[in-house]
Amino acid sequence: MTNYEIADQFSLLSKLMDIHGEDSFKAKSYASAAFNIEKLPVELAELDDAELYSQKGIGKSLGAKIRELLSTGKMSALDSILLSTPAGILEMMTIKGLGPKKIAIIWKDLGIETLGELEYACNENRIAQAKGFGAKTQENILQSIAYYKQNLGFHLWAEVEETANTVLIQLRAIFTANKFSFTGDFRRQNETLEFIEIVSDIKPEKLIAAFAAMEGVKIDNQAEHFLLLHIPNQPRLKFYLVETEMFYEALFTTTGANEFLIAFLEEYKIPDKPRSEEAIFEANKLAFIPPAQRETRAILAKAAKGAIPGVIQASDIKAIIHSHSTWSDGVDSIEKMAKTAIDKGFEYMVISDHSQIAYYAQGLSPERIAAQHQEVDTLNARLAPFKIFKSIEVDILNDGNLDYTPKVLDTLDLVIASVHSNLKMSQEKAMERVLAAVRNPFTTILGHPTGRLLLSRKGYPLDHKVLIDTCAENSVVIEVNAHPKRLDMDWRWMEYAIERGVLLSIDPDAHATAGYHDVYYGVMVAQKAGVTAKNNLSSYTLAEFEVFLEAYRKKKAKALI
Image (tube, rainbow, N blue to C red; front, side):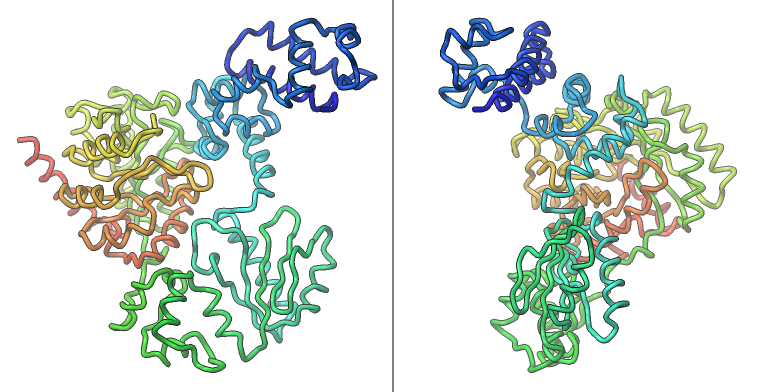
């Protein structure tokens, strides 16, 4: 080990001790040792014991640790503290502006253990409200995380959409005689992806020449019909390059998921040099399958029986269900949230700030709920016919109970029940907790069912089939949380929910008016499961939603008798 490598080990130990709240004197001594070791004019690895202990600041304890590092490459004191440190905390330490004290607050006080959770908390405006932080620090953290993530490889669909569309528009503008189309994961609207994939009939040398003028562009892989480009600070571009007459065959074969494509080729054939994708389906007497739904064998069986039903569109969303305001951890007032919803053409909104146990999010006490309801009544009188409905995103407690008494819950128009704490549960514990909440007569909507954060947190394990069956039995709606880092419930279970008659609700979980756009991402992923407007609660008109709530009130009253 070089002196720099040894110093890094002591620096890391010092920072981790600060984060864990251990002996501050020792932590400072290790930080001082790291500083001194870096400045030494000789390499410690070349010194005998006498020479080692003669160096400034190196006593027996420190010297023993240096010898341990030099002989084994490890330090037991560091290994011990690493075992009790979540991997995500180490990742946070790479983020500019986050020192040990701030990380300790994030981890110990806010219960955040991964970089993805931290980013999500910043987007929810929770970090700005923590002690020692603020809006500017929160924004700096978000910028640093974005910079860090640029080279990690995988991306959210929502994060690459703008780049992808810009690239395609520019290519079509430059090469007007050539065909270009998205394909692969991006075209299928997958939640996460590694590449932006494009099919084209352009010649490789023309494409290379176009990108060569851009500073920093690297050609990672090149073959006769394949090109992989790495643009600085952008997702990699994967091009499939074919002759013009093979364009639509290539588009079809590169779009579908493996299961879909294998199943298709087992039973059907691609006609020679098809003029369009529609021609491929027509030649096989199949209804056209939209790209987003080309995932499984099952969709082919449906296409063989007739037309695929039209899927939900962003224009079908009539309401903002699940939104937060300045009453808890939101950025905007209820009035601003409502007026923006009106400007965007929505018919109503559901205000659902956090419940009392969510202290980190300024959760509402029963008294504050009553005060908020007075404000809502005033706004409703002024903003009619637009209507604000009274709700709370109520925490599901560890035992499955909801975070208020029945008396308080009964003052709400509807209840969104969600898990926000103690996420490291076994499937048995998670199921007990969530099913108890689903069976609670006050629960209207089950919010973000698994608690996952894409590319950051898997979420707690659930038996989706049992969960959906229980929601069906108790007339509970399942949320499709449209935040692009959640998209929870997973689209792979939406079709089963629809089969069981369970309503879905595509909700933005908006913590600011800017969050309203997230319903678009929820719609994109719901399209993959064939969700239609009639399957989605937030597509209900105001009159239809009032009828829905009346049925909910009757169900609740019957259960409470």
